[in-house]
Image (cartoon, rainbow, N blue to C red; front, side):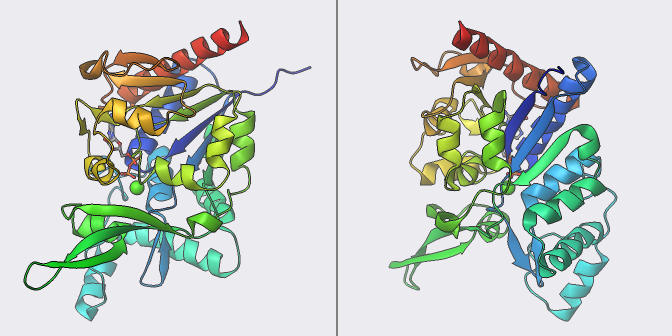
Length: 338
Ligand code: GDP
Ligand code: CA
């Protein structure tokens, strides 16, 4: 009898999730010589947006490009060696919006995705085709959207009247708040269109139920991981999982490493800290990696915490963090079976 194939499932947003998963693969394949373990990545689709008639899935694309070696490393998203002829032409035409950066190579992804979706394929099927293009199956990776149901995160903002008075509220697409407004306008709350009726994509719940380890990369806890957890059934699957769930804090010393996670946490009235984020996962989290700067700040009875340098400066650095997450998961598994 051949031993059962090991499986690791990670829930991921964009840049933080993608860099962590790339490190995890490096740790497994290059450092530990493990070519067998399957890595299932459940990607956030709340950031998805339709622009110029094209369906854009920023977080899934960041994972595809990062794992496939096509990412713009400096920026963290979009394609390397990118040009912007189409966007310049759209600007000449006065086509809106112009605040969302789209390069020519990146456009090809959105064109193909939109065509395939238009032919009736599900987002899972489309994502699998794109994953082939980027060589994910060959790396032992299965990338699943959290859901095939179209969902969109919206941000509810204060609407000030012309005289500065409170004129109620308005909602904008998450991307408009994040990219155009740079999250500088305080969010009252987030609402996710379609989330209540969303169905986990094929394989998502099964992966969570049958995994040996479940990892939460240092992705945005509110608008990346929080959205995946909001897909009906996902949170329950995590609560009931036999696998240890180990997370990596995206907050170091009270601030996000990049992006505006602080603005997201503030809107939820959650402390911007490793402890605050752990609290969002309290009902299912078993292990939590915090930065050395946060040593001793997270102390809850059933949560095992380890402190180490959590900055993913390069692939080897991300691999080291992923290795620490796997080590902690292994310890937790031994404790459970004892
Ligand atoms: P996005 O969808 O592109 O915003 O990416 P994610 O949601 O996957 O990840 C964003 C989060 O990753 C932010 O809250 C960052 O603080 C966190 N992050 C980015 N780089 C690092 C890093 O090197 N170390 C840690 N611990 N967190 C990071
Ligand atoms: Ca994102």
